[in-house]
Amino acid sequence: MSAEAKTVLVVEDKASLTQMLQFLFLSKGLSVQIAYNGAEALEKASSILPSLILLDIMMPQMDGFEVLEKLKEQPATTNIPVIMLTARKSREDMQKAKDLGAVEYITKPFKAVEVVDKVLRHLR
Image 1 (tube, helix red, strand yellow):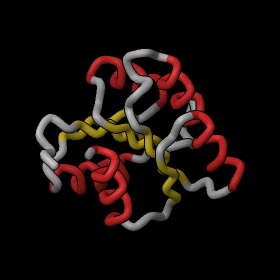
Image 2 (tube, one colour):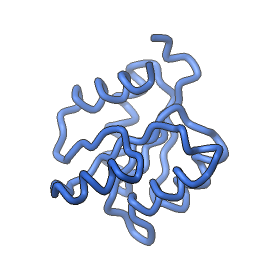
Image 3 (cartoon, helix red, strand yellow):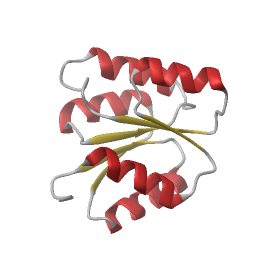
Image 4 (spheres, helix red, strand yellow):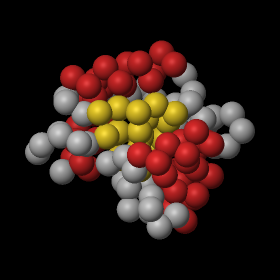
């Protein structure tokens, strides 16, 4: 897989986690954009059209479910794969994410290798 021109949009409100994820993805040759809240995520997703979105659920103002729903309603972003990355572990949350169109659901704390593997798989 060529990582050229592959951009991952990381949507996460904790800067320490975004920095770690950014380092992981950059080490794999991916381009990384960061959004710290839902509104910023929707704006960046529409303007940069990332190859994949890694999306937290629990964020201030607009949660990840609402962001996912809005992404899937927009023709420009509807086909972008979205991986949920969250501390929420309930079956209901996992099912809701799937129903809204998420391709994966990863719970925190996570193994870095698992996140990288799943991201690379969905970028192929």
